[in-house]
Length: 243
Image (cartoon, rainbow, N blue to C red):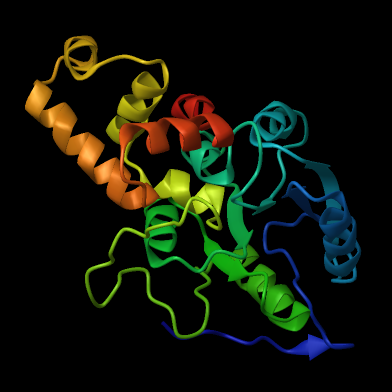
């Protein structure tokens, strides 16, 4: 995909809205207030851009959007109380014309593909420069889809599910590596329920439950049910089933 770099003035890309409005309203959702404050100052240096609000969680984002309805949402993925990925479908359904630029430190191809399939207008990596971010914002607001340099919406080869060492791993990526059914099984195991009880509650066979247990242990890199249960409790993974 060709990435357009627009003419810049004072080192910042300028955007003149085609729909006649004087200002392009943007909203920031990120779980770090310091990042929000810095991003707000940076983007408002672009001519015609004004921050209309911010929030620190996914649930708060849904509540606030209705009162401001921004033109552009700058969205982090890893947030408490409803992460960015979980709220994208609802936002696109309620506000189909709203542009969404995901700003994240996660470069996982699977996450990128899922986000674009959900309808985001671009993804930007936090490791990149502020100049690139401003160009990405201008590109998305103008109606184009922004893609990080060297990346593709669809992987060139099969993407393997990431494995995470429970002692040193990243909780967000761990949750995304488990399927919804695996999360259900893990939650029931943490409630001290046996294979037979789990099979009955989920309306699946005991053999299927055994397969899920094996896959969960492989992803968590533990050797037994006790290890799975301990990790689920320590990381409070049961709450992620409701996301």
